[in-house]
Image (cartoon, rainbow, N blue to C red; front, top):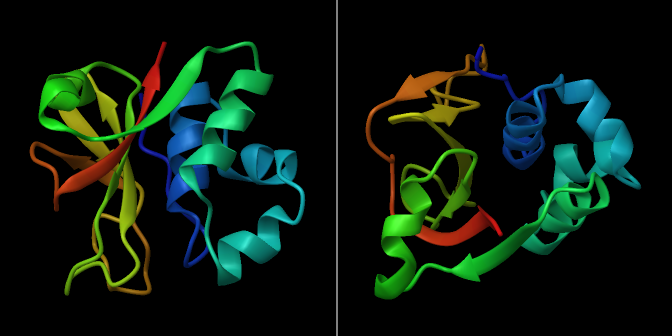
Length: 132
């Protein structure tokens, strides 16, 4: 699968959904009410991303990543939210694919946004959107 590039400052969740749904960024963005506004200004909560996946007849749930579920984040098609840090001041979403992570803005903070795959998470996962 090809990585999906986020096209807005807060569009990493949208790009991860597009990756999991095997579609493009714009298609997923249009599925959200006020999607473009949110992707440009405020971002998306795990609950919103999970609701969209479930509305597509996929069974997903979002959870706080505790030690007992930490191993589950390495399953295919899991989306994680990494906590805020110096590198990611508002956090960041990544999607799991085989043995790597799809990062929709792998060269952050460059404004020439590129998506790609990384072997390791670029931060600490605090929430996971997991197939049920």
